[in-house]
Length: 352
Image (cartoon, rainbow, N blue to C red; front, side, top):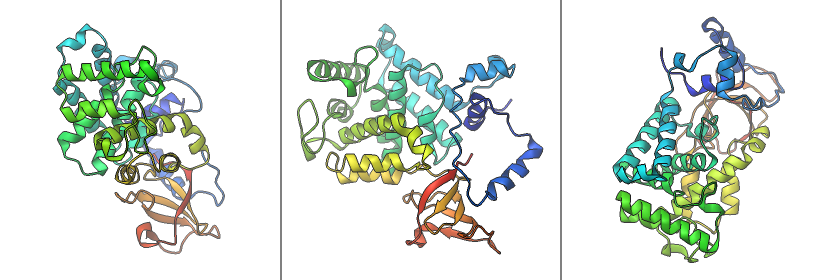
């Protein structure tokens, strides 16, 4: 049996049936011709049904499902975090951490491609809140590093650093919630674990700087500007972005604004991170899915055909309804990079 893709797992989690092969052509045709005034679709997660419950209702045993590579990679990473907080972690090294990150990154690339942001709202799969934050932060920083064209070794190193950045925090908390002596103790403990693992010096420094900010408002040492390493700033940005995304995504999605988390981050953190670090958020992309129906500022509806790397707000789209609600007489493809007067104002329906 071939592994289930994430979209299939989400259908089952929401209690939705998978489309039969003979229905897929009709489904694709229906997506390409939305009504003139479609309403945004509700989130597939709104039913609140877990994967295990969905499987039970469908009469599917866990043995009958091949675990997706992405689910397995997340599970392996979560297990590794558990080991680091116990005596089992004494046998681990930095290569083990980087290896798990490489497995996660490869699975994301295979199953989601450019639309990595989907990982941040994957159904929970036995992960504690702190583990989920660490995993998601690793996902974000991998794509920030890729957007900045860092070499593969540094990408994986930053991913590994993000994965372990909370290991020194007390049970049930993450570094972002701590202050004063509790914060310092957690940062020192995390750095101690990383040093024992054999983390490179640059990554050790990033762990101690993840809460520092370029305007001096960070902690614990109120460092400014170039006093903070680029790795430290990237880790801090990844942590904050993950938190904003996780806490406010349902609100963004209900308004049809998948790019809103980035805009919120840019508005809140204009002076708190170096411009080149913030730019990575714009370059990382991953927010307009292929197949999604979007509304343009001209009033037309268009389907996203492909994403333009480096220009996440300006994908290649195909017009499906003009501003009067009519189908174009001929196929009309628009590369929004070449049409500066046009822009996407909202997502009407998500791709899949």
